[in-house]
Amino acid sequence: MFVTQLSQLHTVCAEEALARGFGQANLVRSIGETWFVDPRYGRGSYWFYLMDGDTIVVSMDITYERAVEAVIETIPYLGFGLYEHAMPMYCSPECAASNCKLMGHDWDGGPYISSFEPGKRLSSASITIAPEAIHRYADALHCDEKELRRAIEQLTTSDGAPGLPSALRGLDITYPAASVADAYYHAKVIECFAILASSVPVRDTAADAVRISDRDCVECICSYIDSNLSFDLSTKTLCDIVHVSEGKMISAFRNVQGDTPQSYIRARRLEHGRRLLLDESRKISEIAKSAGYRNQGAFTDAFKRAYGTTPCAYRKRLRIE
Image 1 (spheres, rainbow, N blue to C red):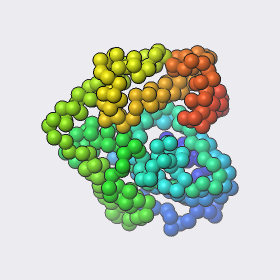
Image 2 (tube, helix red, strand yellow):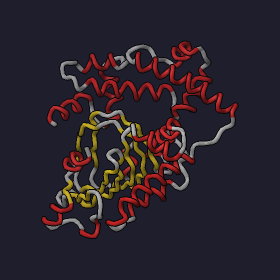
Image 3 (cartoon, rainbow, N blue to C red):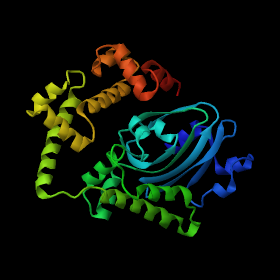
Image 4 (tube, rainbow, N blue to C red):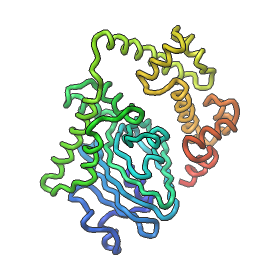
């Protein structure tokens, strides 16, 4: 997945780059893979290291001199990182507006668009894991798996986790010797997960009972939403489903999901529509209705705001790929 994306983003592996006379030998790490941006397109480097078959640590600092775009098919993954300079504007509106620049994501997989403007410096240090790896990290830290996963998912909309930015920045600025590199990066990943686990607030028994009640309510709502994306999903409808007041439902949703019900619905409808676009036998107007939009125009507007392109252009790009 990473190599495919790097190739489309006009970067070249270190060995080839140095042989062709660009890149910097002092930036090539002793472990993992280092790639350099083709000077015809920009400058900078990208590094990643695969650990244990389910964990990847990444550091990048690149600037393009011309517009660059890539569309790749991704697998499901969990991840979090420190995104600096212009990078947050390409992650999410929440990340772009955050002072912290920490971001967590739980990606279901599928086509992913990377589209970068010229002259923007993109810098990040991040950790990506396969969803099943969360169990191993939770066990290692003796913490609840669901709470650790929730800490990742809510990182973007929370106040962050003290100490996590500097811990992640260590992935970017430290170049350990080959003899200790693997041990260093394993320790660094555990450190970052430990900070995340420590950021989960400790609550008393009464508060836990409320939280569990909230979670049950929200799980019911989410299950209904996911099964009825093409139908009426107004706040009133959802309140009637779980028999709670509007204030209670929205509060529970914020406590569990870190967002409002309607924001969740918009995201799920767009994701559903994006997946349906893979089936070229389906008309975009039909997909719009299936995703719960009143017409194709409303779907197109929402899709462009979320993904930076129209459904038609997105489908055409996939066909070319």
